[in-house]
Image (cartoon, rainbow, N blue to C red; front, top):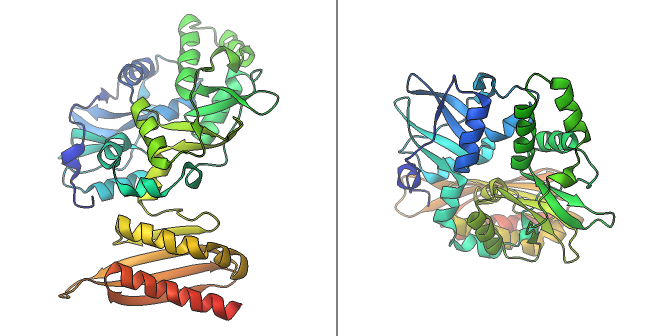
Length: 361
């Protein structure tokens, strides 16, 4: 995957707008095309991007205002960049649709959707359950909560969907950021020049009036590949995850799954991150090795985070790798190893970690 170029899978027919466009026009573009990031042009050249989520943070803006206050400088890609670099930029920035720029002109856009379509059959997703990757801190709503509260929660938490619960804690529907914005701006359209009336409408109207009752939450026992296939088929950015009793326990988001491809947060009890010249095979081997020892690492050695870094040593006839492990917890340890092949160097580092745990015991 690392060597595949952005130009091979980017979307070439890009929906763009200009700095003089109104909020209403851009929202209409996003709504009609099912997109959440729109590159902005000035005299045909790229100057920034407008992101759907930012509109929820300023719902008091008039729909006829220009979008200049919403234009952001997000990371950009070159057609010659690799998919690996694109994933890193998306994970680090939190922006899942990046413009592809060539000599200041937009020649394409690459989204996490494009990447997942390419990688959906990769075996890495078969090794994880939904429970390994969900966001466990998430907002909730009750049917009697107001649209204003829903908008505030969506803005603070930067989420696509918020579950609505009954008095027993079971999910009865969900409110989507898309529906919040459509409601708010449709109200403004009918109440131009009557801001006080609009504020009253927003404060009094209940989320039950816009929530989706026919939502299909993801079940926690699902394999991650199956859950991702569901997200891709619906072109959904995220889904609420429920337990067997229908109670929400987390949010599964595509940007969070991208972080898995960057080797981030692959542990369950302790935080485990991988960086450097790793492959999917090295991610899976490290996860398996950590999984077997994780209880010992967390409960006996009191580790709470391990950062692995793999570096391929150039100029050798054989593939030699250097690997470090920075361990954080009650005490801090720094481990280094060098060997031929990723598998050998990983096992050498794990042996050294075992020796540390043995001494602590």
